[in-house]
Amino acid sequence: MATPLAERLRSDMTRALKDSGSVGLGAFPMGAAFGVLVVHSGLDWWWASVFSSLIYAGSLEFLFLGLVLATAPLAQIALTSFLVNFRHVFYALSFPLHQVKGRAAKTYSTFALSDEAYAVTTGPAAQSFSGRRILWLQVFIHLYWAGGATTGALLGSVVPARITGLDFAVTALFTVLAIDAVRARRDIPTAVLALGCALLARFVFPGQLLLAAFLMFTTGLMTRYVATRKRTAHA
Image (cartoon, rainbow, N blue to C red):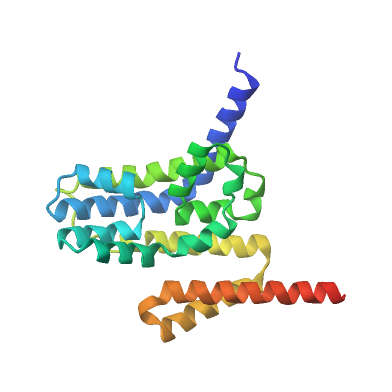
């Protein structure tokens, strides 16, 4: 007979697998596209597994591959990595890392903080997630990406270098997640603020769209928070 601890572990793992299923539909094909690109770039197939397992940075991996092939200086690689992944600084503000217990688990959870994991764990339903469930969720998403990259690399010789529409998989995924979040929270002002920041950054800072949009969005949220507290205090 299974112990209560074993039952909880199995339950957390099963729920995390279900939680990660939808984002896996976007992570796996994008990983496969990366694997195909690795092979078509002239590298051995196993490099796709190495990159996706040890770097695990989504869009940065595509850029990193080009930088490696071009033998770019380490300073350029470091600066590119910082600019592309700077958004994770903002993710850390609301990611429930405090629910993950243990130094090793927290270290891996920090390493595996991807866009997909953040999108799933910051929704209203995720407030009750246990630390184990969050950790397993990240493990499964990591496996989707690394598994997709390995599969794409192994099939690289029979898969075209570019498949029309494949690069839109993750964009479509996050569009759906955003719509679900708006429906769940009914927070229309936040959605309007996010859209406004994105459009403004697109036309004013086209070269640094993501960084500028995040900075403006964070500033807007903080301003709204302070204004709301003041109204509440005076009510």
